[in-house]
Image 1 (tube, rainbow, N blue to C red):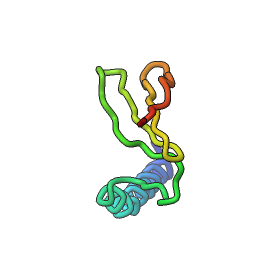
Image 2: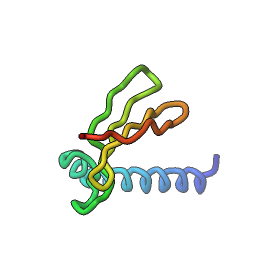
Image 3: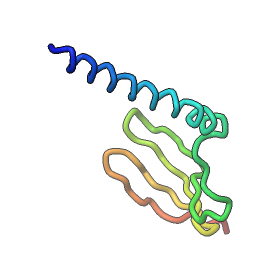
Image 4: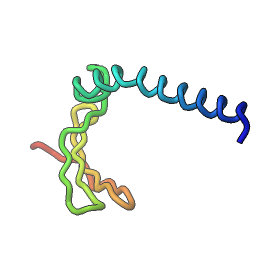
Length: 85
């Protein structure tokens, strides 16, 4: 390995480390707020998640004031709208 290759490798490593360190404060702010949050005017919201096993989970979603169930896992399946009558 020549000196030029070593300098290139070390320079690349320094750039990657600088990028990781620069992204760290942004990630900390997002995690402190609870993640990336949709705007308040969003039409779609995840109400609740229920893990069923290691691969599947049941999602309760709200869209335009109506709630519906989705079975997520190896294949996602729309189970239906929930009527609150």
